[in-house]
Length: 212
Image (cartoon, rainbow, N blue to C red; front, side, top):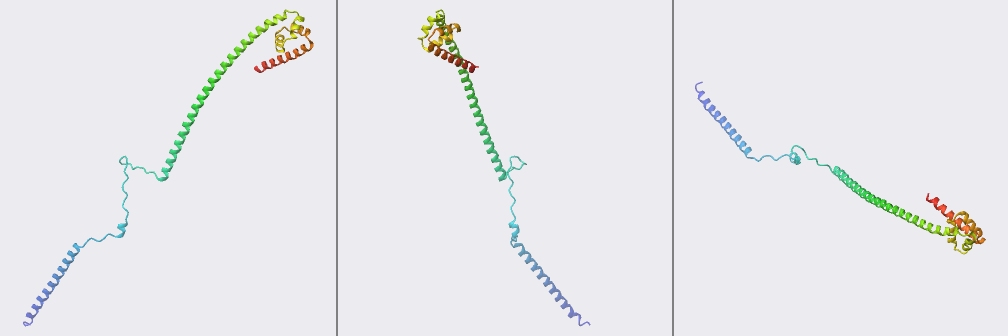
């Protein structure tokens, strides 16, 4: 038994050195792997991450805290159509106002013209009345002259007078005096004079009725 102890001790020492060498080799390998891993480039990003859309930049606003409203294309079309219709209505209204102004000015001129024509008509009527009165006074002087004559003497003169003058004298003459003179006149001339005198009086009556 004393002879075997010295043989086991060297074997144990050799085994311990072998184990220590193994551990040292493992530590060296681990350190090399860590150093290689630290110096390697970062992995490339995944395709999904590259394809992800970037967020849209914020829209500038006139006032802080309030987003600016951007109308869609259809809303812009509606706004443009409304603006166009408003402009058309404004133009139509302006045209109507201009037409009303022209009509008002024309109506005013027509009223003024009508007033001038009425004044002129009144003046002409006054002149005509004055003329008739003057003519009547002239005719009345002649009528008075013939009425003072004897019917036979007046009849001889009336037979030779122009029909227009004769009718005018008899129209202003007293009915009795006119009848006496017609009775003394030439029968054909008296008949023609009576017919023409009736026409003149009918025409005058129709004019008076139309004036009313």
